[in-house]
Amino acid sequence: MAGFSLSDNELACDGVPLSAIAESAGTPTYVYSAATLRARYRAIDDAFAGYPHRLHYALKANSAFALVRLLGKAGSAVDANSIWEIELARRAGFDPADIVFTGVGKSDEELECAVPLGLRAINVESAGELARVEAIATRRGVAARVAIRINPDIDARSHPHISTGLRINKFGVPVDAAREMAVSIANRPSLRLVAIHVHVGSQITTLEPLRRAAAFLAGTARELAGSGIQLEYLDAGGGLGVAYDDAPTVAPEEYVRALVSEIRPTGLPIVVEPGRSIVGPAAVLLARVVDLKPRDAGSTFAVLDAGMTELLRPALYNAFHRIEPVKPRAAANHLYELVGPVCESSDVVGRDRSLPALEQGDLVAIRDAGAYGSAMASNYNRRPLPAEVLVDEGGWRVIRRRQTVDDMLALESD
Ligand code: LLP
Image (cartoon, rainbow, N blue to C red; front, side, top):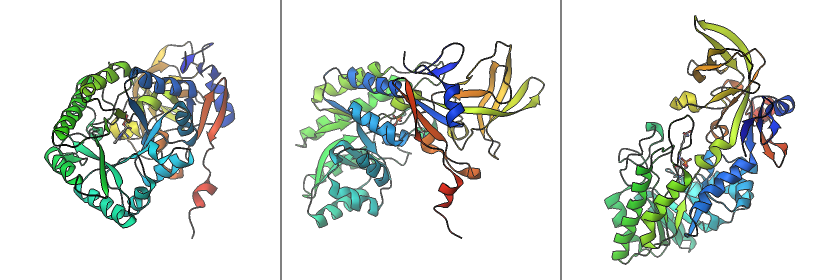
């Protein structure tokens, strides 16, 4: 089975012992399983079972060049959230027609570059943004393909920081304004409305909000068709959650079945923008215990060489990631507070974890770290961005070398 599992009492990635990778690449290091990435891409893609669709992998989850290339070869298109993600995707071989440009706050400079490219769609977030796209397209004598991101006022019931579909969130155009916008686009020659788009949140672990969002898209498409507005496709965004802990989640097949059953009556192709559900479980963050110190009578601090600079999610969202010793000792479990090396009390990677006894120098694997892990890493405390390794077909290679102080200072002058 692809992924991370114990082999000879040692955690391995697709058969490659993580200790061998740490030995050579050092720590902290992200380790990705190519087989898992491909399998997770295919699970969503296959679930459409012939219904017209396209996966636009959300680059924001992880845009490591090698991973983006790999997903491109697997057949993926992309969702880019900035002109820089668009540029990266193009360098990775994606055609403009394989790229949707999402995101609130696209600057004039970004739109000036994006409009002439002929992207699959610019997913506009407001009337102001639409007017800016139109002005650029008019000046350049092109018709810009746009999708309206609608805020459907649906509660994704995920963490408040990553819920996006409520009226109080900054994202999208309110429903009534979106209808008027769609009608107005028909009379604006520099704009072509190709789709409507919703994305109600991330790490969604129940089917209901995802189904409601799809039903909303289908209902709105029908209404627009009634006003003579024919769309090319419907963009249901991303958001499918993954199993960080033992709580139930939605299987890709169940998710896709719900999307297709809601949207099939419109006959329109479906675009989805999955990020986390493809890349999240495909990586661990490999770290070393640099120190152990007593915390209270019952527990010990295990200070790791990875923390909020490498994986911000626990500090930012109180997110849970399983943590396992790479070579679990046959010893009684003990309670650990696993913390990072950064000068912040919030730099906790795992709270109150019961683990087989750890010793200084041990390796641990922080699981399901592929999405919004390396992508959100920082240089706080002048910590270098970690190395990244891809395990593929029995071998492994460094896909991003560890950053150095020279790399950081290359951008600076006195
Ligand atoms: N499409 C749009 C318009 C989005 O805003 C996002 C994510 C996605 C697709 C991909 O969603 P996914 O399938 O990955 O749930 N940093 C947070 C997650 C932020 C998500 C932002 N938008 C975290 O670490 O949980």
